[in-house]
Image 1 (cartoon, rainbow, N blue to C red):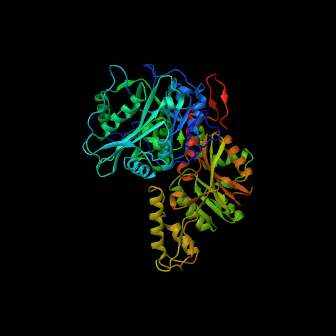
Image 2 (image 1 turned 90 degrees about the vertical axis):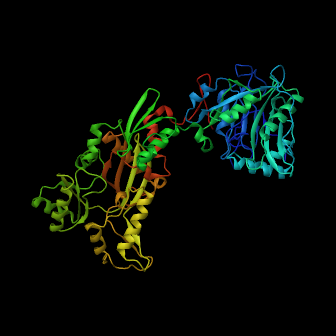
Image 3 (image 1 turned 45 degrees about the vertical axis):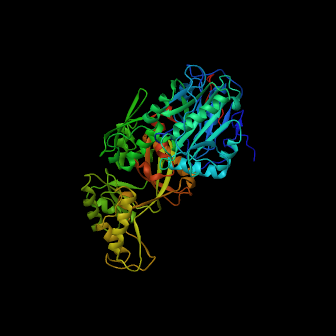
Amino acid sequence: MTDMRVTQTAPTDGEPARRRERVGPGGDPIAQGDPTGTSTGPETGVPPVPRGDVVLDCGWGRLVFGQTFHDPAAVADVLRSETAGSRDICIYLRDPHVLVSRLPDELFIDPSLTYRLPLRGERAPDPAGDLPPGLRIRPLRDTADADVVNRIYASNGMVTSPVDVLVANAATARFLHLVAESSTGEIVGTITGVDHVEVFDDPENGASLWCLTVDFNHAPPGTGQALLSELAARLTDRGRAYVDLSVLAENDGAIRLYERLGFYRTATLCVKRKNPINERLFLPALPDGYDRLNPYARIVADEAMRRGIRVEVTDPEWGELRLTTGGRTILTRESLSELTSAVAMSRCDDKRVTRRILAEAGLRVPRGRTALGDDTDTAFLTDAGAVVVKPARGEQGNGITVGVRTTDALHTAVELARRYCPDVLIEELCTGEDLRVIVIGHEVVAAAVRRPASIVGDGRHDIAELIERQSRRRAAATGGESRIPVDDMTREVIAEAGHGLHDVLPEGTVLAVRRTANLHTGGTIHDVTADLHPEIAEACVTASRALDIPVTGLDLLVDSPDRPGHVFIEANERPGLANHEPQPTAERFVDLLFPGTRAPQRLWSPAGAASSTA
């Protein structure tokens, strides 16, 4: 295995040569933090440009020496190739704020302060003083040392490194991997220095400090300071001019120590990639009321905050948010936003209007009519054979009766529907799978088959007990949004299957207990986006354009999601985006609201031209 871990050109294959698994650089002698070293030039924070496009593999991640890059787009390419589970850091980049402003969805300015310790001149530190009793500082030597260092990293919430990388790096002049060893021979602290002259012939003759941390349970007081002093002494012996480090701005204890040792602030900033390890550094604090949001509003808030969009919870019970970035502010209620006009919303609100608009657009809808309460209703039932009765306005499956076949049942169903809306729609009963398609910005984003609530017999519990258990599971999985009601419809469906509530089903017997697949009444959802037939997808886009609605959940009955046969049932102006994981429904919704925050398809370059990300 070679110990060469410096590259002179930005990676082009999107993956570093080695996979790194755990989390890392951070911690300090006072408290767990992110004391990561950076090297700056004079007070401008930007040294003269040396050779290369230099990237140094440290094990826990890569150091990207920004001052060695002529093209900031190349820096973005390197950070985009960051390996999962690692933390890359770009230091000394000229105008880092400009690069971040071009790629705000991917990069951020690290909220740390950079400190410098001069190693020559009047401000240079005194020679290292006495070590704590029984402590000695020595180089990291072998895999046993590296294993202990990784345990200290992990105990302090830091990114660990492959032991072979630590050992190989320690054997080079580029790194000074030091450990503090107690009188018992136990390693109780560690520090890593990087010699910039050895890495890229730094014209500033500088160095930087990384991964300073100690075992807080066993290290004697002063261990961190002893490691710092020894590293400074060794770099001084090499003739280096200074050593830099960065520390989280709120780490007051570490900052006091560094200032006491002679470190002073510089103007250097670091750039990092927005990844799960770094989330606490770039995500804002949760807004008031966030914990009271339902899953459908929370998924939107999470995606907005991930992009740095300001989120205000204006009405948590209603799921209402105010989202702001730059000079643009949009109010949302779950997936409903100000971009949906009142006219478009009213077209979806009245199912009779929905079906008329879709039919006029050449789309297939069931035959239907408004209930008049006279013989014409019965005549329609006789002609259709079986019908669905539903409120013309309403949601969540309230007041819907499926499979009406007799005049008496029709009268009962119409009266039920009128409890929710005075206008009632009667439609012929169409068979097929219940399909929900999410269309955002007139593009299909997700599709899922919804199935009615069902139970599975176990040979011991009766149907009522099984429904209660399944209802509790659905409620827990959906934050209380989905429950199976034991009402007249449920009893009727069970009776049609030849059972009563207190019958015990044989083990393994599946029994549907609702006719409709509505998620709020215990239905389940199964992603079929990849299988959706192109003809159905095209019809859904046509429907969204006919309704002139930017976000909609279209309900269809289909022979199968991968076959073209379909009929439209209704359109929803506020579909539940949280029901369609792993499809990127929230991402596409926020793209629609704030197009400028969407992940760019091409990289920015200084001349304003785009360069390929391939």
